[in-house]
Image (cartoon, rainbow, N blue to C red; front, side, top):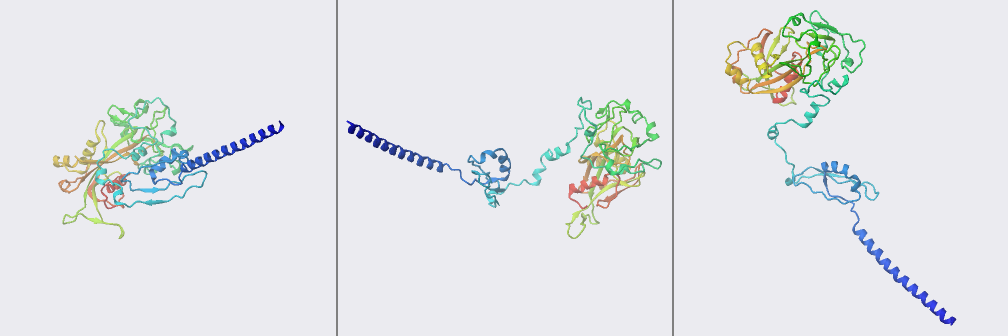
Length: 432
């Protein structure tokens, strides 16, 4: 009996060992299969070539997923740009090696837009628009905005610090308060600043000018009947107590209106009439500054010698109330630079194709803390020289002389007129 029980126990133990061996072999087979599947799904340690622009955007948003997921990227057939091999962390390993190469295949060369095609677009570059409008209001915004702004927010940071309107001599009898360069901006503390008040008697008696008390004016920063009190620089600050507008470019050392008609911006127009300088044979003259520069054609423009400052300047003037700038530049050119009896058809044809060069604040010697000049410069170019050949120049009431002058960098002109001519030179790629 006991012997039979012992045999049965031994048989059961052998059976359990056999069963365990069989189960073990099955588990081993499963591990082998799984390991093969894992190896087959192992993430590769390389990625396809991707464009620089694609990596710059995609790596920022999907950086956490790049180390876990395999990605495919389709390349444009005409991309032709620089490509970089992706460098990412794979299973806590170091960054893979980065390298770049330039694709020179002719069938994948980048498509280049011709310069002539670029200028067919009627809109400006986005970067220029954002830079121009940075930290400033639109000039057409209503001044009755309910949102309150601090005084410092009205300071236009895109304008160059003015220097000419800080010269000590305003005219023969009046001086400005001296201002150091680091105290020009309004957001800098200047406790000793005590500017001189000055408005000429001629302006005070003129019925076309603003009243002496600015509290009588209710529409700053907007169109006031026919007077445009808006600024190209944006919305300017108006003192809530005195109702005096403040120069957007900083202190000038003088308050009041000086020799200007209006409180705030006084709009002007400057016509820039140009043609190519030609020799006796009618050929365009070319010059260069040194032997390393290329020869460039020389431009010439109509210049007047101002009676007040004895400086050469553009034949411009102030915009009348309700007058369009195109009418202003044409009228001022005829009044200051032309003789009576000039063919009207020739003038109309010359002034029919104008290109606006500049519209902004002007560093003019007549500016004060409460009144300043803003101008629009328009270029009228005679390519063949036939229209301007029929013009007979004659100095007007405000000018001593009027002549054709060649444009170069050594010119000494009134206010910021030299900067305007530099824009014209850049437009035609002419000699400077």
